[in-house]
Image (cartoon, rainbow, N blue to C red; front, top):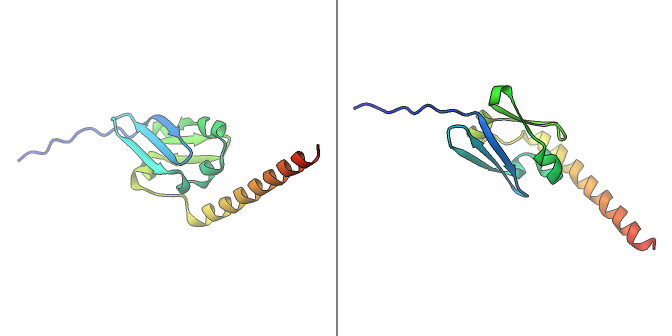
Length: 112
């Protein structure tokens, strides 16, 4: 019995980032969706920073210049989240920034 092998084209066609999901469409018609929490740099970025992405690595990678983040379709297909140590460091940094922003907002509200 023969096996029909379809040609897989794992190059990036499109990228969408919501509040909690990263979705990557591939040239061969497949769509990869992964939790954004796997990639703390993307999670802590603003919608504007998340939407500023470029295809790199001959079509097999995605680069976010504003966030200094690079992902490959190979890693996404493998289901590979960011390394744990990197994720903890970025998550702690993100918490400090949010706390600072909240403090600034409170100061603005009570300064009038």
